[in-house]
Length: 161
Image (cartoon, rainbow, N blue to C red; front, side):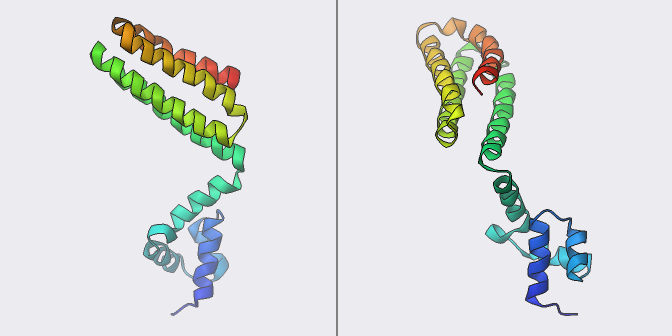
């Protein structure tokens, strides 16, 4: 049975708005299999899951979106720190500099988007500069700096974030 483009759009809109695919199909009066086929056929920028994720971020509001991005980044930051610990000291030094640079740039960008994060961005920029200084002048201290980096970064987030 052929369905109208309006039915397909109704299913897509309901799904993107947060309904399950089964609920969206039922509301539009089509089978779940048809809805699945339409969803699967939508690719690229029109992909229903991509639209749903974008709507989820936007509908939460600006501050919530920035917090989600920051949370995701800090989780990734934590994972990378754990991986760096297993590297030789010289490589740790290079990776710390890269990681703190990435953190500093991310915080600066988020700080421009959310003024409350500006203070945190400045604090993390200082931390980045400290990492560069240690790398250039005291590379043997890199493992100790790495050990302190994560808990101190968490403290900065608590105080300034």
